Length: 72
Image (cartoon, rainbow, N blue to C red; front, side, top):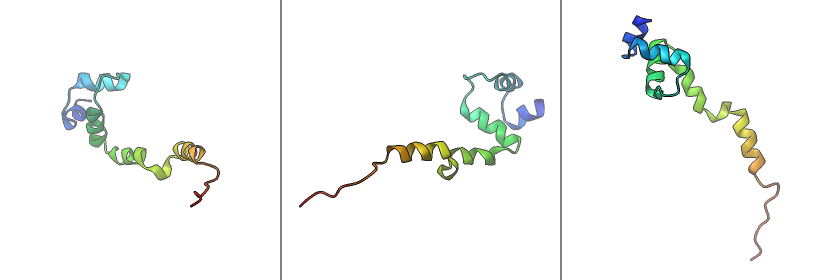
């Protein structure tokens, strides 16, 4: 654990807080730890709209069923 803490430039106590799921730990520390573990590439998928099935379904539900053109 100390090696991961050193690579992530944080303390071992913070790593323990991360393992416990402490919501007060900043996202930057989480990303630093993931980077030190070689798992940072998976984070990019979190923001990838093409892999978000739930978000796509919600967006489709908001779209109007039919669009009428305005009469001029």
